[in-house]
Each structure stands twice: as C-alpha cells, then as structure tokens.
Image (cartoon, rainbow, N blue to C red; front, side):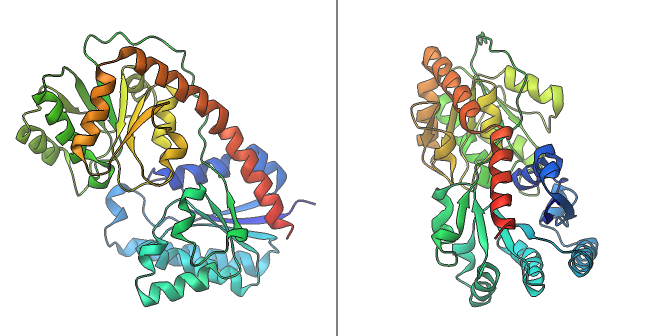
Length: 363
C-alpha cells in the first residue's frame, strides 16, 4: 500500500523558482506512482502584481487553503506532510500550515527554496515563530551553502540537500555567428536581480568603446516598469544598445536564448536560480555573482565568470573578458551544458526527491 503524503506547496501562477519546482513535483510520474499524493496550493497570489500588494482575496485564499489542509488532516492518515516554506512576510502565511500539521502529530519536512531566516531572527516574534516551526522538523535545502541561514534553528543532522533541476531542452549546439555579441538578461525587472547594476556595467563598456547589444527579457514590476526602464536606458545613453522585450514564453523564449552569446545575471538576492540552468542548456557562458548557491551552478572560470554583487565595474570586467574572447565563450558554454546534464536535470531532481520522501515518510 502506498504511503500518503500531503504536499502544501505554492503553485504557479506567478512563475518563479519555488512555484516551478513544486509544479515539477506535482507533475512527476515517479513521485506520484510511488506515493499517494494530495496537493494544496499554498500560493495566495495569482500574478506578480499581487505578490507585494494587499488584496482581500489573498486572505480568503489563505483561509480556504488552511481549511482544506485541516479537513485533509482530519480525514486522512498521512505518513508525511511536505511544506515549501518561505521567509519574511510569507512566513506568517506558511508557518501556520507547519504548526497545524504538527498539531495533528504528523511528520513534517520543510523544503526551503529561499533564504532569510537569519534576517527574520532579528525580530523576537519571528525568532519565536521560526523556533516553533523548525522544532523536530526535517529540512531540505538546495545547497549546503544555504545552511548558515538556518543553522541556529535546524541541526545539521536534520538537513538534506536536493539541488534544483530542469527538464531537457531540445537544442542542438550551433556556433554563434552574431556580427555583434548579444548579451541577455532574463528575469522580472527587480532591482535585486541586478537590472540597474547591469545597465551601469553596459555604460562602462560603451565608454570603453566595446560593441554589443543587450536584450532584457522579463515581466514589469512595481520597482521597474517599461517606462522606468526606458528612462534608465536614456539616462545612460544606451538607447541603441539595451532593449526591453517584455515577457517571452515557449518558442519566443527559445529564440532569445539561441540568439544570445552571453547570459548576464548580476543578482544580489537569489538561492539557486533556474534561469542559470536554462542558459546552460543553450551553451551560454554566464556572468553572475557569488549569491546563495550560485557557485554550485557556475564555477568561476569554467562555465562562467563571477563578479561582485552591486558592483558595475566588476560585472563590466567579467563581460569584457567574454566580449574579447569568442573561443572562451564557446568553451565555457560547452562546459556549462555538460555540467547541467551531469548534475541538474529534472530526472536527477525527481530521483533525489523520491529518495528523500521515502526516507522521511518511513521515519
């Protein structure tokens, strides 16, 4: 008889790393064949515009999900409750689900796709809530690099590691022949993702006389919409070099990746960005930062270059090295593709998650 598992997870929309990985689990034939799975959507937002905005409907979605979980715990015997938990304000939404499962004396495993526990601990209330949430609870992290964030709340022996992975991309390697190198940034227009840092770096490169084009792809946000982006570009005199294309999906997104020479992602707020894995699938060398678990994905000097966070000069220097050396771009792109297929496939992710779920549901 299959073990029953209750998955309390955020599902898209909106689309971001945590919702995408939870959707992969929900759609996994391997996991759903192995276990009797129930899924409850933890997300209270249905678009990026709702994420940081107050909406009464979000309170209703939370209460509805909470009542659904309560009902399932009351009527079914679960061997394990799996909760994808986030920090900061989201902790107030997510922690009650963990505490509810504990109230029913269920084995709980928390999967952390983000970080922020160490910052939340500066508040006495949040610190108490974190201690209650993580007490006698197993935790799955994306990398050991992220363990210091939760070290004061979770014993090392209660932690397991499961790196992210992505499905195979049908792309046959082709040598790039752009007359002018094309740089690509793909993410929602959020300051912490390095949008403005990259624009400053492009200005530095322009002033040095380098030829390039940089495409920005992703959704508008309250921080940076299309109008502000255009203003930032104009202020740096980059109108002929930096272009915003909005969101791209499916074939349009593939065309953007295939037509690029270097992927640039100077983030200062991430854990294990899936977009870097996507870039690796298209043989793209990467310029990024030493943030979260990114050094697990991008090895400096092998499949990309790592610059300093919030430092346009450092990012510009990294990009400059790749603009000057087409052979290096090609070699790094191939190295990244091989690394992706060795460590970060969706099959590897599902297999690892399946093993961990077996381990914890049998405790």
